[in-house]
Amino acid sequence: MAIGSRAVSYANPACVKSVVVRSQSVPRWRALSSQSIARQQQQQNLTKTKKQKSSKCSNHSSTAAAQIHLLLSQFRQASATPLHRLRQLADAMTAEMHSGLMSEGGSEQLKMLPTYVENLPHGDEEGLFYAVDLGGTNFRVLRVQLGGKEKRIVKQEYQEVAIPPELMQGTSKELFDFIAKKLASFVAREGEGFEAHSGHVRELGFAFSFPVLQTSVKSGILVHWTKGFKINDAIGKDIVAAFEEAIGRKGDHIRVAALVNDTVGTLAGGRYWNEDTMLSVILGTGTNACYVERVDAVPKWRGAPPKSGEMIINMEWGNFRSPYLPRTFADEEVDIDSVNPGDQWFEKMISGMYLGEIVRCVLAKFAQEAALFGGPIISPKLLEPFSLGTPYVSKIHSDESADLTEVAKILEDVFEIRRTTFQERKIVHDICDIIAERGARLAAAGIVGILNKIGRFHGPTTTTNGSYLSSRRSKTVVAMDGGLYEHYTQYQVYMRAAIDEMLSETAAQSVVIELSKDGSGIGTALLAASHSQYHRF
Image 1 (tube, helix red, strand yellow):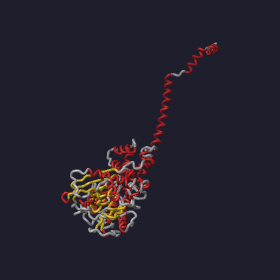
Image 2 (cartoon, helix red, strand yellow):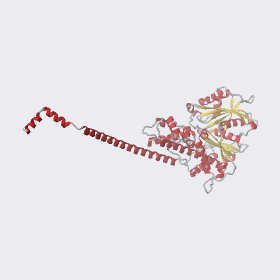
Image 3 (cartoon, helix red, strand yellow):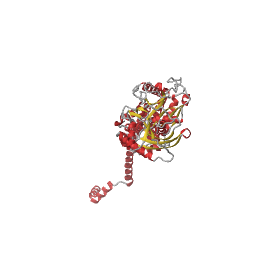
């Protein structure tokens, strides 16, 4: 019965249900424990996945950082300007100067153009004179009232005007009509303190900072354009004639008394104040140099020798090139994409128009090849040519804040790169430093090459410590002008340091670099005075 009764009991549906319920139920503590274990397992899997992803990101980040630093190291090495290379460049510059003075076309690099400036200003000039200084993306109109030896420059005013980009590659008439219009407006505002001689036509000096083959002190044929200009119908034409025709179309009576290069104007301005000024250098949008040479050192000169026995030589040194120039992939890119590929190597490595673009090219390469700024998507602005101007490079370079906040701001404002790490900002800062130092040291080598040519030192012979020998004369003044040199402080520092490095201590002390602010404009007006048709000095 016991067994049968147990069987009947299981057959009872109520009993079966009861048994089933009891068999499926799990104690609460055990159910909670199972859920907890499942959650722990899930969390462990999630943590493991995160660690794997983090490890992959870390490895990727480390790889990218290593690649960036490798690229930076390679670029630094390719841009290096050690002392021996600077010395080679200075000697190469001197050699090309000799070749360019021997005959027309004697140097394929340096034009070495004799100017017809015979009367450098000496301080006795009097009257009201104007100047137009066309040297880059802007031009200046200026007037000065000269008061002779005692009063010197009594008063001066100037206006700077931006040239619309379309005029830089338009027609000659369009460009000169625009300049003449701005000049007429400026003359019309001639106010108190400025007084022209009664019955005298107003005279101006025209600083035209492009290669010109001068045929007289107030005429010259344009050889070719630089600095981004490409106005084909002006090449081979008399620039002064084109300008005076434009002035005439405006109904003004203004005579061009002197056509000069802005570098020549800077030299004249420097000589006006200091007789030891022997050369001048422009470091702005573009670059050039000129200096005072002995006539007997210019075999290609066929005219009557100036009474002074000296003449100013316009070098057009922007086209200097040499295997010793430390060119990089960025220089090749800038050159290929320029309006004058293959020309103006020196200018494209040291001047204000190109330094910012070189920096941009380097940053773009780093972003594309090593995911600088995070990647993989690159800001379109970073790939836009000339989106980074050299003034931004100067601001980046001068940022001394602990976290480089100015660098971050510029990257956001210019390239729309909003999130950067300190290490990325530091790399940008380093690239600007490399490019600015290289440009400044190359400019210094060019200056030393000129000093050697004019006998400021005993030639290229060096002392046992590798420095050039001492100066023969007590002082040589280099007149400097241009926004790059004026506003980029670290560029100034690097250039001066390189000159000192190349020269002996005595020679270095004899070289004085003076900023001739707006020297080209004032100097051009002074040359108009010293070559005036009413000249009475």
